Image 1 (cartoon, helix red, strand yellow):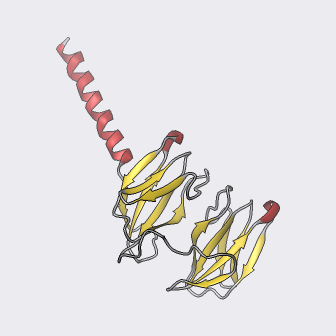
Image 2 (cartoon, one colour):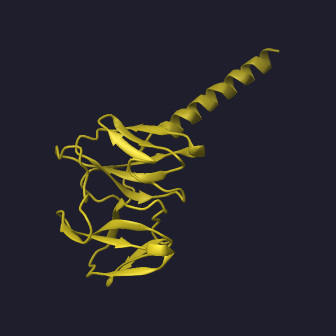
Image 3 (cartoon, helix red, strand yellow):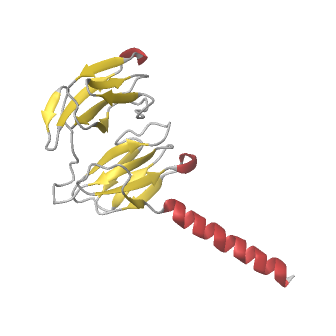
Length: 178
């Protein structure tokens, strides 16, 4: 009987540790933009997850990892305490530095904008069609802001080469060109 109780307690403790690890943001270098720390925050099973971080310098989605859409204000967002995700959104987020306020980056309208460290290009896949947005790309392109409900997943619904950015499958977004 004591063995069963001890086994049950060990199992409960192990599950509690797994739940804590699942909820904790993962800091590190996940292909971020270089201005601050990058955290990974994941909504598993469609549940809302909150990842604590110092967001005073702003937050931007740097890489979507899920097939579920990550749309700011709908399936992800942030406040001064951290980043939240829901509805299956899993992504890497860059946490900015230097007191830029909470406005984030790259929130321009359509077309080009100079946002420091590169230019921002809006590129839209309308009616699920492939679209190419021409630009001179030297070092790369990164999704700055997703404007669609359809997921923008690098290598699947968007990508880049030296001649610009391509989007498909309804991905609409703003891309930083370096």
